[in-house]
Amino acid sequence: MRACAVGASVIVLIMAGLAAAADSRLAPTVKIEKPGQCVEPVAEMRRDHMNMILHQRDATVHRGIRTSRHSLKNCIDCHANPKTNSVLGKDGFCESCHAYAAVRMDCFECHSPSPRVAASAHKPVAPARIGGKAP
Amino acid sequence: MSFERRDFLGLGVAALAGAAITPGLRLIELAQARSPEEAASTLKRWGLLIDTTRCTDCEVCVTACHTENGVTGNGRPATDAQWIRKVNLTDKRTGHAQTLPLMCQHCEHPPCVDVCPTGASFKRADGIVLVDKHTCIGCRYCVLACPYGARSFIHEAVSGQQPDVPRGKGTVESCTLCVHRIDRDEQPACVEACTADGGKAMVFGDLNEGAGELSRRLREEASSQLRAQLALNTGVRYQGL
Image 1 (spheres, rainbow over the protein chains, first blue to last red):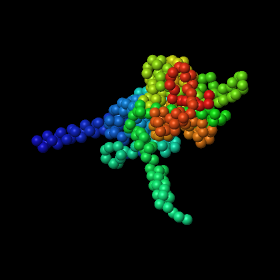
Image 2: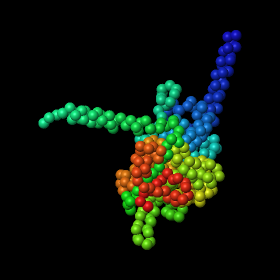
Image 3: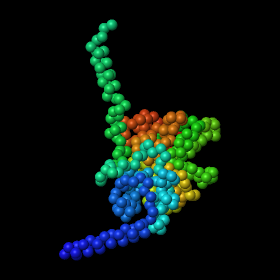
Image 4: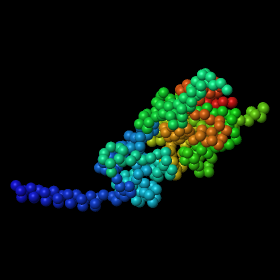
């Protein structure tokens, strides 16, 4: 029984190692400039960020709801590369992954890829305030 | 000098009033401010009053609007976007000249909304007429339908947009009444600039709020709508025309 459990745990470890190797081989190089907690868990953000900003877009444009948690502006304020001040470009947070995944994004044909210069009026939501544990 | 009971009471009331209306309290404004989670409401209808007798030859409203909204041109006046422009009127018989700013009139019954085939042109609950550029297909029906020539089509790729004001090629746009500023309880950029550096000719406010300055001025003074015969019930009103 014990040998069986050890064998199983070895198999699990090997599989985890393979998965990690596969992850590092497959994943794009996304630079997170401000480490910390995102507005939702990372896995959820990777899978669903487009739905979140799509939902927020209609709420903002048509109904004037301007909560910053799922707003594109909040993404950009936090994720813009400090060197280029943009989420586009080779190391840009949005473009590096979208280029890897070969998914075209139209957002930045109209939206600014840079945070507002004088960000006095709009402050990004601090991760500690929006649910989950404080970083 | 005798200090009578009546004078003493009067002083006390004045002191109390002074204490109640301190800048920190702002009871009315706080009660009316809308939180970011709250949707725009039909209880409000935003509007403007423009006093053409005070409107001078300056263009601070145009400059402020285009700076605030990142409206830049390509040096081609025939096709460059105009969110607001100064119009000069001259009576040919008498030579009497007037100047006034003209922008989207934010109609209650907007023709641009009637003709839009995709629903991109819409009126928000608080009366602001907007274009949802996500659904605008650039057909330009609204540009033709607008009786005020207030809308512009964007012919060329745009860069350097303001984060609050997305703008892009192939869509139609016009004055938004600075909706992003209104949503954080600020006045439109043109009104702020006119009050600070211009002729103090513009008043912004809620047409439904009886106690506000805009409603008071409209109630007590004569005003007119542009092309009133179309019965669009515009949100922008003029004086002195």
